[in-house]
Structures are given as C-alpha cells and as structure tokens.
Image (cartoon, rainbow, N blue to C red; front, side, top):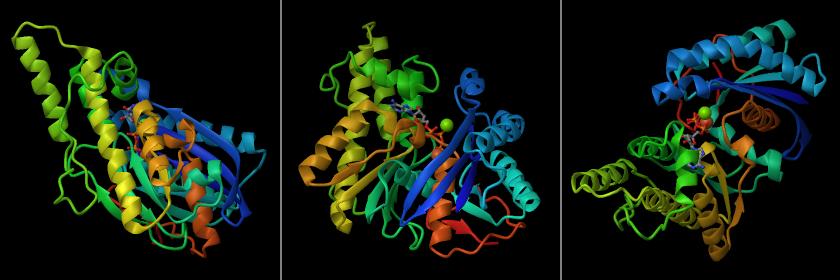
Length: 346
Ligand code: ATP
Ligand code: MG
Ligand code: FE
C-alpha cells in the first residue's frame, strides 16, 4: 500500500509518499517541501494570508515533484492535514487532496497534524512502542500518551496554557534583536553564553501542578524585565548569557516534565517531535535525563521534525492499517482540531 500525505497547516507546503511495509514499518518514497518562511521574516511572524497564497502557488509543483521522486503515477490513498492550523492555509491542502483523490479514484483521509508529528518517528526508528511524545514547535507544545498508534486515540497529558515553546524562542529572540525565526539564532547565541549566569524562572513546576501543563509567558516577561533593567541602568545586556539562561529554562522544564509524564503513565520510551526539537540544549538534556531514568529517547532527524507531508502519510498509513474508513469528500477543515481525533470521518 502506497500512501500520500499532504500538509499545508502553517507555512510549509508538503507532499510525502510512503509505502506501508507491514507491522508498523514504513518505507519513505518521497518528501517534498516548499516553505514560505522567508516571506514572513520581515513581518516577524507567519502572516496567514501570505501563507495561503504561497500554498496555492506551491501545491501543484510540490505534488508533481513528489510523484516523480516516488516514481508513481498515483498513490493508493490520499491523506491530508484537516487541522489544527491556519484556516486559509489548511483549505488549500484539503481542496487539493480532495481533487486528486477524486480524479485518481482513491480513498481520502482527513488527518490530524499533531498525530502526524508523532507518527513520523516510525520512518526513522521503526514500529512505535507505547510511549509519551513531546511536541514542541512554533504553534504547539504538547505532552501526549500514545498507546497503540493508529488503533487507540492519542491522549493529551498536558499542553501550554499560554505561549508555545517555539513561540517563546521567537519572541525572546526578537526582544534580543536576533530576527525571525528566532529559535535557531537564539540557539547559536547561547553557545557562547554561560547558562548559569542569569537564572530565569521555571513556569508551572510547583508540586501542585498535577497535569503536565506548561507556561512560557512568565519566562518571556522575566527576560524582558531583565533586559529593560540593564538598559535603564546603562549597562550592556549580556546577550549570550541571557540566551543561554532562557534556553536552559525552556529545556529544563520540557525535559523534566516529559520524563515525569513517561514515569507517571508507565512507559519507557519518549518521542520528540516538532521544529523546536532542533534546539541543541533540549536534545542534550533530553538525552541526559532519559539515560538517567532508563527511558529510550527517539528523536527523528530535523527534516522530519518540522512540518512535512511524510508525517501525514505516516499517520494515515497507521490508521488505514488499523481499519480506519475513508473520510467523506464533504469534510471541512478544523483549525482547532483536538489531538484525540486522529481522523475526521465526515
Ligand atoms: P507548527 O506549530 O504548526 O508545527 P511551525 O511552522 O510553527 O508549525 P515548525 O516549522 O515545526 O513550527 O518549527 C518552527 C519553530 O521551531 C519556530 O518557532 C522556531 O523558532 C523553532 N526552532 C527551530 N530551530 C530551533 C532551535 N534550534 N532552537 C529553538 N527553537 C527552534
Ligand atoms: Mg514552519
Ligand atoms: Fe507542525
């Protein structure tokens, strides 16, 4: 079975093609992505209207490249991100997916973007055991419990109550004058800093926080206050130390809570996903803490962590193998789709 996945929830137009080999094993046949990230840079964030227009221009060429790379005329099933994401952006991918599925006369599956970020790890590391997944990107921060991928609903253990982790990186980078997207620039700036020189608060790590939720807006404010105080006093801002201290706070909270969540639900595997997993300190701390706790850490390569079509194909293939019925061609986008709903039937 050859499954195509189409992704257009934010600023990446992705078309991925995979082959279901069997027993949770997938073979990657094509991974084509066009990003409009550079077009958003001068606005300091993703502009929905620009993203939608870019998807419109990119979708057919990206589709053609993917089919050529896989060496096929058509797949056996078409899957598409139906949500969560930007409404106008989602609409482009969904309209394209319906049109191709109808023209090729193959089944159509409306898939959850967040589940895709989890499922894509099977491309890199094979069948997925029961695990906890930590998703960190520009728009999302979630701790998820995955029992039987494609067969049982993914359960949310916690999420951010305010900013997403990647969003916090972007906002703090902007505050420090590092540009957009700020995550990679802040990561680089932190390399020259001392992560213990400036200690920033760790949000929602008190004993009363039973759910595995996160908060990053207080941290962002703490960084802003620190910078303002230095500027008012006419003292230079120790940029590298601030970047390193901020990054340490985010990585500390994310990894501590992820390990705690895995222990609470009784699994010995942690999967990371989302574009902010590129963060060097997050990876380092996750490795350290998982090793100390006897937890196996699975982190897909960076290209698979950011938004792409392969992740949608990967979740779709697992759902189809698990017996999911196709979605109706009348199904609409759902910008706020909860993670528990892996596929929208109608
Ligand atoms: P979505 O939230 O829908 O998954 P997105 O486009 O916001 O989509 P991604 O493309 O997965 O998210 O990831 C981009 C985010 O990851 C940005 O917020 C970026 O700053 C952050 N990021 C990328 N590299 C790093 C890094 N090395 N350190 C910290 N954050 C990073
Ligand atoms: Mg992106
Ligand atoms: Fe994403």
